[in-house]
Length: 390
Image 1 (cartoon, rainbow, N blue to C red):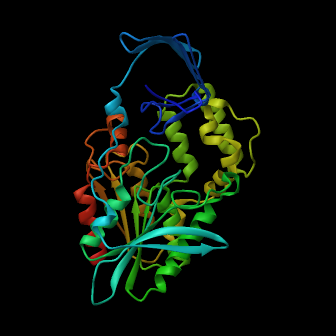
Image 2 (image 1 turned 45 degrees about the horizontal axis):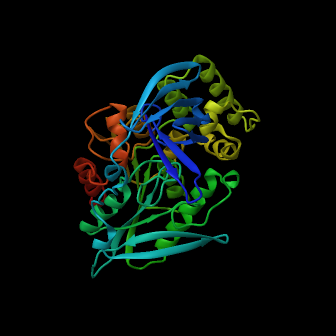
């Protein structure tokens, strides 16, 4: 467990908690109280609470951690400040490549993206890269995770180096785009945005084939948009092969939740599947089921990836990694079996952010989510390039 505590200019304390065993995402700390050496940290979203004392000699905080009715002694050691604030060095930046800032207007909302177009005297293929779930930007980085992995930027750079153009973009409310009201978002909006980007690429005479590459949640968005906008080829990167509620149920079971919380989560999912919102959500499950995201979940739950991919009649590549902690190899197999046009590639030791991580240890695996120096899986790049060029 790690706490990052900050003080603003007015003496107010804020903090976030990082616990890779529980989630790759940081948890907000609702209350931070420090007085006369006594420290209190309240993390309501996981029913966690730390109370202890700060020792200025040893630079430690010693006390007790309480969570879901259990209490444990906990000693927090201060990280060297130089290490704590050091910005990780970026592996590859798009400044090394010829990029164009582009945008489209979708019903009055401006969406921003980056085009990488290699120099060529003839038309080149172009890949529309669609990011995964949550606040993930065009480069594959999430504001809810520590550090950057730059996976989608690295994919774009790999394509560029092999004579293939790409367009990657920030989703609504992410990166360079204007904030949006979370409760107004729906899954279909993301599909429509992808369709508009495909239309944008169709108008550019520099491009020949248009290939969709969707990562994680972007896999489902991409396969629906590919059919609606007549894309030429489709690539699924670590995409689910089951309705997302089935994946969420499995992930919750793997997080060692109590039977009480599992029963509540199943009831919430059943309600949302029927299009019904939930008024009173258990605080321990609010990260997933808070009222503002329920309309989005309802719109997402209605799609079955197997049914959607079976409706495609274009060449398909499905790629999954053996050390992916969020999507299983069986998901890729379900997608491949649903469409006779599909090519299935299982990449040994590739994890969810497309990096070579030969371990399923949650802590070590999640560390790669914030490591920009770790390159993309070479086997992934090889198969994607061969698929497009063939």
